[in-house]
Image (tube, rainbow, N blue to C red; front, side, top):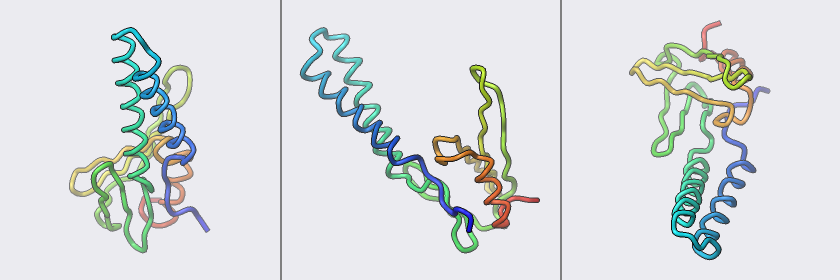
Length: 138
């Protein structure tokens, strides 16, 4: 049985939240210079916001009975098989390593791009599961 839903790793999201909380507390209590306090405060609040929205959007991609759900920070969109135009992997080199992105293009001209962080696994394995479920052309 193939995996049917993908999301960022829970430990990674929780780690971002914990580091953000520690930075926000340090900005208020430990840091004494005003520029450092502002920078640490912005970084802490940013990490907390990122962790909150990443947790809220779980699972990021899910295969339902005959549809595909794509969760965002605000809404979740559901697409039937006939509404998906193209599913593909885009590879490029960045900082001496290969980066893969999973792209899902829909009939309403919406492009959803997923990284390894978004899916919690290699985008190639997700493409294989989507192809097996009938969402990507063989």
